[in-house]
Length: 415
Image (cartoon, rainbow, N blue to C red; front, side):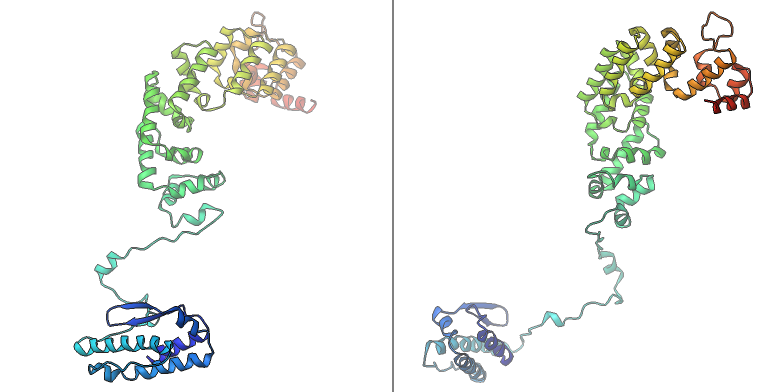
C-alpha cells in the first residue's frame, strides 16, 4: 500500500490525476469521484500535496484498529483531509471483510510477470488436437508467389496447371483469387466444367485465360448451357465451344442470343449452318463484332464477292471473318490483279487468305520464271491455288514446278 500511495503522490505532483480514487475490496474495484474543490487543491504547491499523501499513509497504518471493528476517528481540517478519509474508510471496510472471512485471501497479480508458455512445453494429445493455428499471410506483395504456401486455393490452382504469373499481371485478379475458397468456389465450378465435357488437363489453361468463371454462380452457368442446348447444340459442340472459348459461359443468355442472331442475319445462314459456323470458331460469339462487320464490307464492296460466294467461303474458312483487314486486302489484290485469279477460283479455295503474301509471291514468280504459271482450269498444266500455297517446298519444286529445291532456293535469293 505504501508503494500505491507513492505512485499517487507522484502522479498528483505531475498533475496527471483526473480526480478518481480507487476503492478496492477482495472482489471488485469502485471508482469514487473527487470533488472539484479537491481538484483545485491539487494545483497548490507540491509541499501541500506531499502532506496530504503523508496523512493518507498514516491513516493506512491504522489498519489494525479498523480490523478490530473500530471506525477511525473523523479528521478535522480542510477539505483535503475529508477527501483523504474516503481512502481510509474504504481500506477499513476492506480489512473488515478480510477479517470476517479469514479463509479468503486477496491476491493482486501483475499480468506482466506471468511467464509465457514455452514452445517446448509438452502438452497432451487432446490439447494438441484442439489447437487451431492461423495462417499468416503477407499484408502486401507484388506477386502471388508469396501467398502460395499459405493459401490452399492458390496451391491447388498451381497443381491444376494455372499460370499465376500471368494472372497477377491482370487488374483485380490477384485479390479475387485470394478471397476464393477452393471447396466452395473452385471445386464446384471444376466439377461443372468436367460434366460439361471439358477435359481435366485443360483446366489449367482454361482458368489461366478466364479466372472470372470462378465467381459465376452455378445457376447462371446452367442457364447458359440450357440456352445453347435449346439452339440445337449437342453436347460435343458445347464442350468444344467452352474449351476453345473460355469466356463463353460468362456471357448472359441475352448476349449469346444477340450474337447468334447477328451471324444469322448478316450472312443469311439458316439455324443449322449458323450453329456449325460458331462451333468451328467459338470466338465469334465472344470476340468483338466490329472486325467482323468491317471484313464483311471489304469482301462485299471492295472485293466484289456475291452473297452465295461469301457464305461458301465463310463456312470453309470461318477465320476470314476475324482476319486482318490489311492482310486479306493485299492477298486478294495480288491474286486477282497480278496473278489474274478470278473470284470463282478464290471461292473454291478460300484457304488462300490464310497464306502469307511472301509465300504466294515467291512461288508465282518462280513458276513464271519457268513458264509454268498457268492457273486456268480449262488449260493444260493447270495449277490450283491449294497446290500453289499448301504444299511443302520439296513437293512444290518436284511435282508442280518440275525443278529442284536448290534451284528454287537460288531463285529466292534473287528476289
